[in-house]
Image (tube, rainbow, N blue to C red; front, side, top):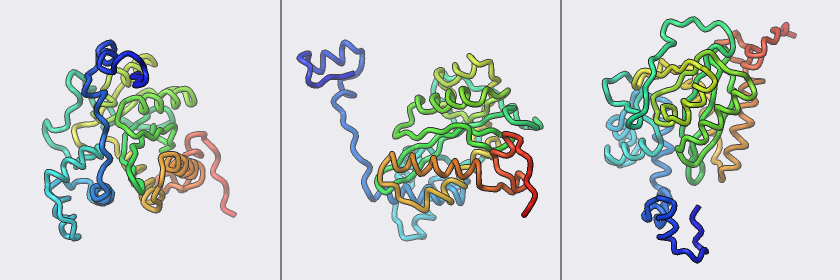
Length: 274
């Protein structure tokens, strides 16, 4: 929006657009290499010990010879959009003014595709830098219906993934999310309301409420992300896309009777063993 080559001064352009001059002049600083290394290890520890908060992670890192303070660990966790996942009172808050919806899946028996969809965001480390990944998952079949990679946590990439899933696969009866600000935002919930989809949201900090997406993150990180050091965002996007094709169509799931998500979602017959 801001044209630095325009004859109108930058300050006047910002004033006309109704945005802060500070935001125009500010240039984000890259994350130091040392912090990127710590963030990568925090992500691995978080996958292994999802209940670990900043204090425990500080101590785990210290045991590996990585000296870092608790507040610094907490700041990096915030940048990574991760938190210890255990039930705790009044600590996981959405953005001010965003509506929270009740959790509807606790006693629900899910018996078919497109009955329940779920979503979440995770942190993806690269050789230098990081990105965020969002995925839309069918609860019954575990199939990844749509996904997007983004360099920021703005809501746009979540909405685009949702719109793609709806366009390609119809709509679910219930859509479940956590209470993150992206999913409680008006932009995201407006799409669900437009399609007359019932909205469900996890309890605060309770990983069991969205367990199938948490299992997906574990699979994609241990089977793909941690085995590579992506040098660019396009490389990360392409590699993750290939993995999801494998995950949906080739990788057998023990919880699905050793069938694939595609086989369950599209009701393909189970082939006899050779």
